[in-house]
Length: 179
Image (tube, rainbow, N blue to C red; front, side, top):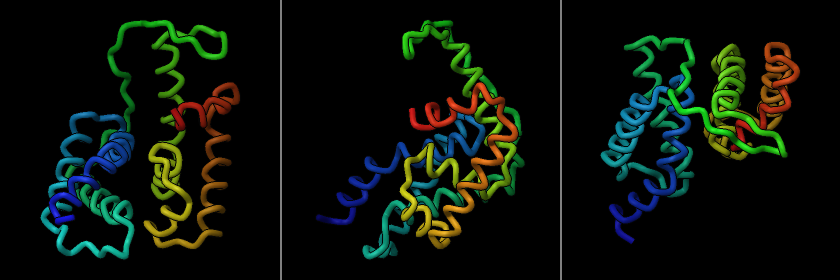
């Protein structure tokens, strides 16, 4: 398989994960997340000849995305507000309960605001683990931390979330991060 074909395969495999990582790190700014995702893959394509095949492509592309995000944040401080998308009110059935789209978005926003109160390093762990479905091993490799440190930091992040999210919403945390 030639390099262009291999890169295209990786692009389709990782585009959505990188986009979601950036989208949530940018407080749900769709346009900016799309721009930075494009920039990430453009930089990766330009440097693909330097990619070490013995290393995980996911770790490599994520590191590029993270660097693009850091560069952007240095140049443009992020607005800390989380905005709700403008959507029509639509009933959503969940466990024999009917929620409106607005109810779901308000709950999700509250949860995200809780995540955004965490220190940057813990936000990143939560987003990698629950938003991007990275395994612990992938996170360890990506951030160059040992397994025990990762477990402790994930536990610490969960405890901190428990203190800043209303108890009735805490049980929904995993539901929204996994869906």
